[in-house]
Image 1 (tube, rainbow, N blue to C red):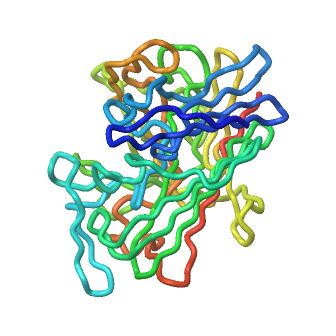
Image 2: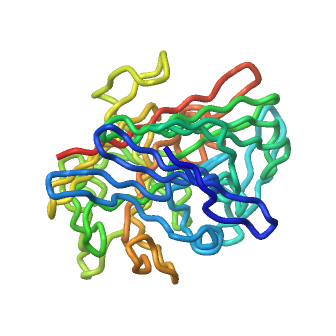
Image 3: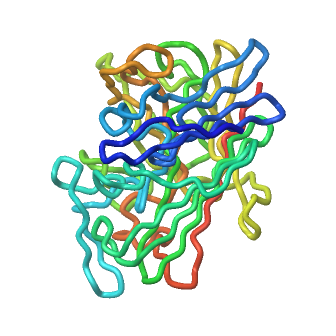
Amino acid sequence: MTKTIFGTLADGTPVHEVVLRSAAGAEARIIEWGAVVRDLVVPHAGGRQRVVLGFPRLEDYPAHSPHAGTIAGRFANRIAGGRFTLDGKTYQMPLNQDGKHTLHSGANGFGKRPWTFIHHDEASVTLALVSPDGDAGLPGTVNVFCRYSLVGLTLRVELGATTDAPTIVNLAHHSYFKLDDGADILDHEFEIRANLMTPVDADLIPDGSVVSVSGTPYDFRKPRPIRFVKPDGGLFWYDNNFILRRDRSEPSAAPGLAIAHAATLRSLRNGLAMQVWTTEPALQAYDGSRISTPVPGLDGQPYGANAGIALEPQHVPDSPNLPHFPSTVLRPGEVYRQVSEYRFGA
């Protein structure tokens, strides 16, 4: 494990980076800005492969990063109109999506600010963040923890939070994955263990219903390429939330919580695969169709459309306004816990 200064923010705050290594030969670089996984390299039969999108300079993150590698929160994903009611009181959040809705808790969400390293060793690092009462219009002071661990060829993400007043919490890890050196992920084979998804409107806000994926472009129950061509010849793009079956599970690193197989991504070029396992009830799959960065990424080339796919374990978007879905309310005395694992192999 090594710890260095990765860069300095405009206000003079230093941002540190820690390098994690596992006995199996995986290596991850974590920075305090946004609790970002800046780089992740894993060995495979053909050598070593970088599997996430990232940037070589700190200044590229606040200026150009599409949430690459962050922890999104205090409430990840979208809230319709940025408004919800909790215990009879209505709260208003920043409207950073087209001036109409809230995405990832606004322009200063958890993925857009510095965290603090509080512990690190050869293969793990823990970061902490204090989100004050009123942060993004939300009630309660929330203490948040994120622990990244390299266990063999697995990146484990453990998230926790407590509050001193009733609030909402929905955290999500937001790395963009690409398992080979191709220009995009459209020919990656993809499988999601989900029979149902949440339909959305033109603003990507769920309407509160669930529909079967059967016979639709959202049917990834059997592995198939991400690329899906519409009748008019254009590409179908994905930024959707899937309700996980959770039919294949095992005990997680958090006692009392089961971790379930959510998805599998596979490169047909080099045979490298990644399984996503999580304690969360849903998975947001965003194919990166709107990525467009004017600065070079870790591969030396600017990232364009579909340069990576974000697989974000979380709760259903806008669930504070959809009480029939699992609750995202956190109250004093309770502990928010999430464990998600990204398991690499042949």
